[in-house]
Every structure is written in C-alpha cells, then in structure tokens.
Amino acid sequence: MERICLICNPIAKSGGAKETIEQVISLLEARGCSPKVSETAYPGHATELSKAALDEGYDLIVAVGGDGTMRETALPLVHSNATFGLIPCGTGNDFARALGIPTDPQAAVETLLGGQTRLLDAGMANDQVFLNVAGFGFDVDVLDYTEAYKPKCKNGSTAYLRGLLKAIFDMKLRKSTISFPDGSYEENVLLIAAGNGRFFGGGMEVTPNADPSDGLLDFCIVHDVGFFGVLSVLPKFLKGKHLGSRYVTYRKERECSVVCEPESRIEVDGERMPGTPVSFRILDHALKMRVPQR
Image (cartoon, rainbow, N blue to C red; front, side, top):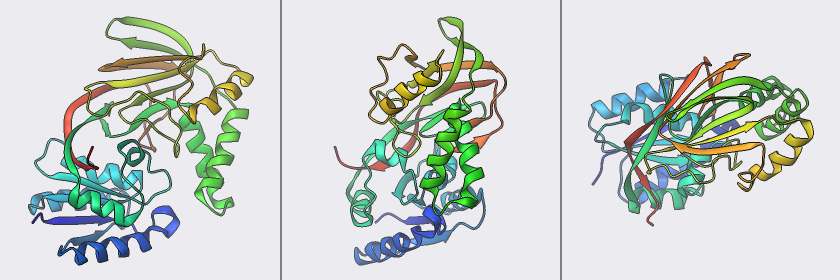
C-alpha cells in the first residue's frame, strides 16, 4: 500500500477547508490507510512539508487546499519519483477543474486511491514553476484590486467580483514586444496568459485548448481593445468562446518572452510575483500526478 502524506491548508476557502480535511482523513482511514497529516502555518510552509515528505520516502503526497497550496506542495515533486495528489477545497480550484478532479471529498479520495497516474507538464515563468496558468496584465490588476477589497467583503468571491469590475473601469493597456521562436512583434496588450491548464479566475476558460501533457503552452493574448471591446470579450472567456475575437491572438508554443511598458507584476497559479520582462517555457513530463481514470 502506498504511503500517503496529506499537506493540508486549514484556512483555505476562508476556513471552509477544515471540514473537508476531516472528511478526507476519515475516508482514507475507512479504506485502511494511515496517512501522515501535516498542516500549513504560513506562506511557503507547504513546500517545506512536501520536501520533508519526499525525503521521508512517501509515495503519494497530497495537497488538500486551494491553488496556492497545490502549487507549493507540487514544487519539490517536479522531476521526482513521488506521485502528486490533489484534494481541491479552495476558492478557484482551476487546475483540478481542468483535470476533472472532483471537489466532493469522497469522489476526490476515490480518485486518489483508484485513479491513474499520468506524467504532466509544468511551466516556467522566469524562475517560477507553475502547473496551471501564468501571465500578466489584466489578471494581475484584478488580483491587486481583489486583495484591496477582501477586508471589506464577506467572502473571496465578492471581493473578486469587485476587483474584476474595478480592473475593467481602470483598464490598462501595455505596449509589449512579444517574442516567439519564429519572430517578434509589438501589441498593445491587455493580458497575456500562458496556460498549461485551461482555467483561471475560478472558472474563466482562458486557454480552452490547453493540454497539460502535450509539451506545449497555450498563449492567449488580448490586445488593442477598448472599454466596450473588453465588455464583449470577457463574457466569452467564461465558456472559452473568445478565440474568434479580433482582439485575441492564440498560439501553442514551447516558449515566449515579453517586454512591456509600463511594467507589470506576473501571476503564477494565482500568486503575484516580481514581474516583467518575463519568459515562459514548458517543462516536459515534469510531474507524476494522480488523476481520474479516462
């Protein structure tokens, strides 16, 4: 039987993850498992706990939390022999959504114990690994405004909605030089997203053709758009129907680099990082991950 370590974030989903953590432990114990349970206490702690579990020889190291916990837990497991598992119980759960990992605790445990192990790609944004989506521009502006609104809102979803509306009304275009392997060009960019997964922002299908095992990143570039153009494009993101828009360029590539003015911070799986200029590239077959049976 696999040795399982759960790395749990009890404050995920504004504390709502606690009940899920308890259910997951009970469900695993009912199946004859005796998982090690480690709880995170500060930013970056999940990475420390994951590395310790890897050093201790655990076979299946599982993030129980949101997208931030997912990324932190996965970092030490890139190009390792351990398998990464995910019990999604955050606000967005975007990578889990792309992989079909259920949010219901019982179904998620069934995936852990009875799913298949696939080799998945990861991405790099400068020196930062990401599993799902990285980018800059509008999405970072939304996150900045969302953080400002969180103390004033009852939950993260309301803060995100207010942040989104604020970013629309204070819309910024950045003059960008975009370099792909076949050449460079300039655009006035609202957003560039590099997708290994399909979703960001809690379900917006920004890179709808992304496949986390095809050895490529999907680049979605929204450019030369005004206020009313944004209002027409954004609703299409919800269902991944924006690719035909004249404001959108979409490409599958192994790498891309961007210089922009004014500069922007970047977001990496929803976490804001030091920013542009930025280079994106793919990491082939970087992570062994437990996912639902096809």
